[in-house]
Each structure stands twice: as structure tokens, then as C-alpha cells.
Length: 352
Image (cartoon, rainbow, N blue to C red):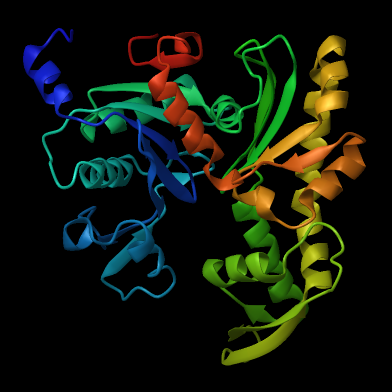
């Protein structure tokens, strides 16, 4: 039982939660109910303050819809950058909103929370995540490395004496890890992921078409005609933005071939980082991975042809996991159900 009886009583009426706290999106899973919330990690506040608009109505999708379009009195913030908290106060308010939403408006709840974090963050950054969640209303906070959560979420044999290679391409980071016996044998966190893919498209349109576009438009181009491998039928789409020479609105047409070329730089860096992790792995585990290959998860895994490109470069099979976007969140849900079993790979504020 909790040392504080009042905290314990509040906990009895709370729903324990797993949170995939991502740079681009936050997913929440609840024990026995699965994923119940999937919202962009975006918050709209009154400029000059950190006061969330409309009692939290401008959190998630409602706030993302304002990106690049908000009037002068409103600031739209993505409080996480490269997988870590860039704005502590806004992150706390965002987490409080999500926790309250899961509990149908009850603000006095005190749930246990499992939060996934990038493998590369520092001890200070880990404590910042824990304290933000505690201030947002969590009774107790556990942290789990994203590749481990993803491996569990897609049912890789992470607890067995067999090596599994997983690449989680999120919004701010790509998490690459070899997992065996419920531990990370070798891992890295690469700050090249979905945001950098979008940035590559923005830079391409500016250089090649003299057209300035925003993040939302770049993401739409990536999702519509982006690829990492030649398509059976190449595509094109009309794109509107601001002419960088004359400053007026203009429309142009871009093709999947040129967008693939624009994306080739960050795609190659992700593949090369995966190769480096493979070179670190012990020989016996390398032998396992030759058979099992690499499993791709995260939003970036949905880029068409990425598995082909990675398999070609690494010389081993590569596959996109089923429902890659929710892999980490599903893994946090399993951890909620098996906290005792996986205590060795969790960290809490009781440490350090």
C-alpha cells in the first residue's frame, strides 16, 4: 500500500495509463481497454503566457490545426523536441489535459503511469519527464525505453536469448536497438526522423521551386507522394505556398521522384545508423538477426519503400510491423499489466 493513505485512496479511483510521449503525437493506452487517445503533441497558448486556450480545448488536433495559421495573440507550441521536453510548463499542462480526459474530467485522480522515452536522453531529462508527469497528477511514474516498448508492442521475443533488431522512426528521433533477454544489447537515439523528412521537403521546395511552404504542407506531401524506393507508378501533386521571389501566393507541381530524392539524405542516415548498431552487436546475436531481420515501427515506417531501401543497404530482411504507429503505446500497455515482470527495465523517481 502507498505510504500516504489519501494518495492510495485516490489511486483506487484512478485508471493506470501507458503514455507514448512523442515529439509529433501522444498516445495513451489504458489497462484492459487498449489505446483510447491519439493526439498531436501540440498546445495553443495565449502569447506571453503559458495559459492554455479554452480550458484545454486547444490541445492536440485542435492546436495542430492552428499551426502556421494562428492570430497574433495565440502561440502554438510543440513542447517536445527531439524526443525530450523543450517546454516543461506546457508539457505538464498537456499531460494534465490528457490524464483528465482519460478520467472523463475528474481532476483529482492519481494514476500510475508508464511513459516511453528515447534511449539517448540524460538522467536530468529522465527526471524532467517524471516530475512533469507527477505535477500533472500521476501518483507514480515509470519510464521505459522506446525500443523496448516497441519490441513488446509488436510481440518480438525480447525476453528470450535471441537478438531482435528494431528501428522506431518517430517525429523527433529514430530509436535503433538490438534487444535480447529483456535488455538493450546496443542502442542509439538518432535525432533524424519524421521532422527532418518534412524539413528536407521544405528545403527542396525552397531551393528548386522558389516556394516557401509550412510544416503542415510538407507533411501532407510526404504522406501523399513521399517514398524511399521507386514506386510502381510515380505520382505528382499540386502544392501551394508563397513565392520566395515575389512574395505572392503561388501553386506548383511536384513529383514523387523529386520528393524521393529530397528524402534520400535523412533516409540514408537512418539506414547508416542501423548499420552501425549491427556492427556493435555480438557475433551470436548478429547470427540471429540475419534470420529475423529488422522490424520497422513508428510513423516514419509508413514511408513507402523504406523496408526495401533498408534491406538493400543492410543485406538482411526488413519488414514494417503491423500498425507501426501504435507499437510503442501498445508496449506500454503490456508493461502496465506486467509491471512486476518487467521491473528490471523500468526506472522511477526512486532511482538516482
